Length: 288
Image (cartoon, rainbow, N blue to C red; front, side, top):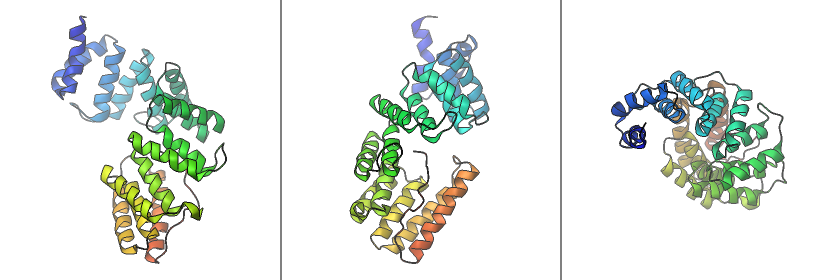
């Protein structure tokens, strides 16, 4: 196939002409073009030009991954990690992430680090997790810094160091990961070490988070905690209530994750109604 012809469907996708791109992609995918198979999978995953269909997305992503496409191998690892279009399987997530990382995929390195940090599909190993998160960060992954920050905040494999956590969360935000701003707001608002508590900074980062991602329940929860730290409890209750509504509408969390988040939300809201700032006593091992 001529190079220009092979590039045509990707040009059409860039122009959002999905209806024109689809038949060309399908033809290439049927000829076992791994890149085309992965792109077709993403269209099904994102519902662009076709109805959203995670099962078909996983089917085509699997074919692409088996064809050796590193990006698709990384996505297949993520599908197994989240149970997207396939049953959740941490062992398979580990296998695909390992394969993709060996080809230099930074996202796969970050996912592999998560698996080591949480002991899913592999024995828990904080040192290995930190090594891989640093590798992913160096390769440009925007999520790795927030995980490194979490390890410093909780003392996982390193001495607990809130200053390091703040610096790494800041790096995450600057890289474009809204969770950096969310966790900065939370840490300044709820840190158990009072020398790092700063209500003014907490509100500033909470506002950054809600401006960047206003549909994220965690953004509003962070802003609520920040307002409470400044004794602005009416604003805290308002933000927490908004967060609760977004949480219940969230379609990405599974029921267990949603229930756990709802329990924490109720505890925070109860504190705000009693005119008390909230300090996180039982820090959740959250995704970032």
